Length: 197
Image 1 (spheres, one colour):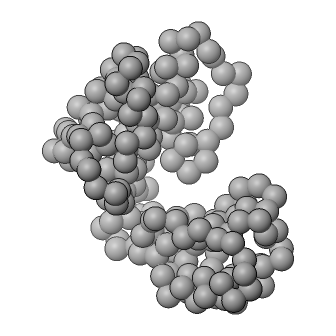
Image 2 (tube, helix red, strand yellow):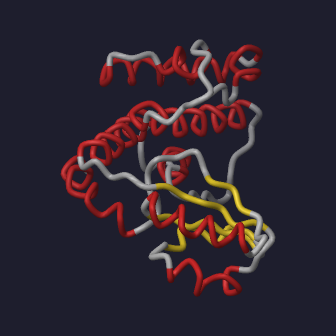
């Protein structure tokens, strides 16, 4: 919540891009993306129906700002929802298609009641604790960079892993998400999303 607020207030290009996205979200969800991002004062921002399109919308809007400055990429790459924005930047998708896809993916996840979470391990090589997270039935979600990786799984398995990390004095951060993104536990949400695509 609040991502890009200063640019939204100060940059007409970003504001215009988010306003266009807002109309798409309102058409599909009868909710205002801009209101959800900037006018609600609640610390928790975990409603996938809004967070999914919000992430993609801000990424696309940031690209529009760079584009207005005559920045043109030679290559694009994206991870997770970043792939949706990368598809827009590369000309494969329109912004509307990317936002609609983000909404439909979120609906598929919510509809299939996929729950769990994620935990980032900090200052520790993946291989050093691989046996531990595998023992707790967790999945490597992202090996971000040397000494920083993220695992996904059920809340119960993450709680047990977290307790063991505490005993071993290993630094971690429990991510504020209620879904085990980037894990096989997400498979249940594929059907609804594939039918959209």
